[in-house]
Image 1 (cartoon, rainbow over the protein chains, first blue to last red):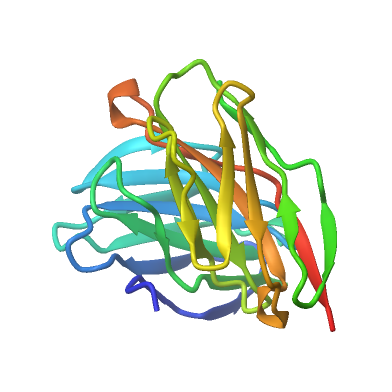
Image 2: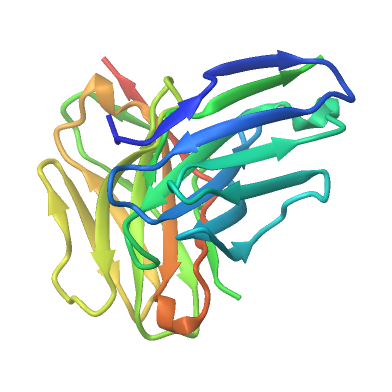
Length: 112
Length: 117
């Protein structure tokens, strides 16, 4: 158990809908990362937050947004969902900007 | 920009044997971190081993060790006494230092390891 929690574990929704994925970092970790992993694919970096501020952005679609709250938990919002958004979404945290990533169990999103 | 390459999409090893997974990377930075992560069928990402580029000594964690060749920009993972539980996708990752201004981890495409009984 990495100490990073993600909810929900599974999510099934229809095209055009909007969902919110939630992540709680390990106790003491200030940085949160979001990654997308499609079936049998590598990890695509989406976005990183550090102590509430956005610090790095990857290949995140405009339909996607995220934020980190004062209690350091983070939410990833996915809107106008398409079939191609079906993937495993990982949250990871690190103690600071130089820390090792610790991954949560992921949220499996299925868009039908 | 930094890149990470894992040229072996799939590898097989006999139980109790040793296997080496390859990873090369490209960077102009002199200091950085390198990692190997394991993703078993459960899809959980598990840190296997970490190497700081400024350290010449190769990192080891029980049956897992790395061969870090900085000049060659190579970072291979050796698994000794392979066990059935080692079967997984293995990802190599590169991380810049915060002083570089970038904060992203860069992952390779992964190598799927099969362990044969």
